[in-house]
Amino acid sequence: MPHIELFEGERVDDLQYKGLKIIQHESLFRFGTDSVLLAGFSSLNKNERAVDLGSGSGILSILINARFGCPVIGIEIQDAFVSMANRSAVMNGQENVRFLNLDVRDAPAQLGDGAFDVGICNPPYFDVTTTNSSQNMAISRHTTACSLEDIIKSAKRLIRHGGRLYIVYPATRLFILSNVLSSQRLEIKRYRLVMTSANADPYLVLIEARRGGKPGAIAMPPLILHQENGAYTPEAREIYHIAGNTF
Image 1: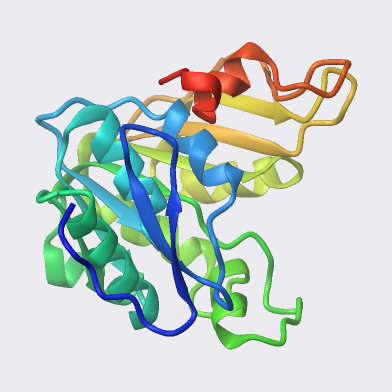
Image 2: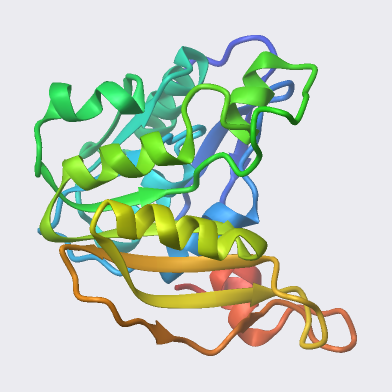
């Protein structure tokens, strides 16, 4: 592994998958399980080009590249995250993963309409009325830098006709997301609800949408993360890379 410089407050975390590691900052937003779940839900091939909209720490790009071998470009407006993500890619030897300090809204003009086969996105979930003491945290968790509509509009332009968008969002806001996607001719083709246990309400939804697709979606069986005794289910263990399991 090449030597990578770390700055004050940064640390290296082990992703427990194919020897991958990621640089994160103690005081900035760190990736959650939703990104890992989305990486496990996504399906690409090594010849497809992917764009990660709002890439943050780079976790999605790193996992997607490791799973499928495809090139990934991450777009992130916060330069601190871009720096960490690019150093993480170098540390992992992922030569075809890179991150750009770019506003998602400006990405189509910079990178080209239809330049990618696949988009992946774990967008901010909360609206601007939600407060947060840290500006970096607020941009990562709340739609302060751009709206959901902005993100989906850019995704539609960046993805070629017939291309796919993989996105994770709160289950309670599924129909809001569905309406925004449909307004941009990104039609949901399959979706999967995520539940902490079999008796819990769904809290996330994983979606595959297709640009220019016809209406009509397949509802996949729910993804249940915990068994009755609180232990992870076998599928969750596989997704989270627990006890040697892989994707």
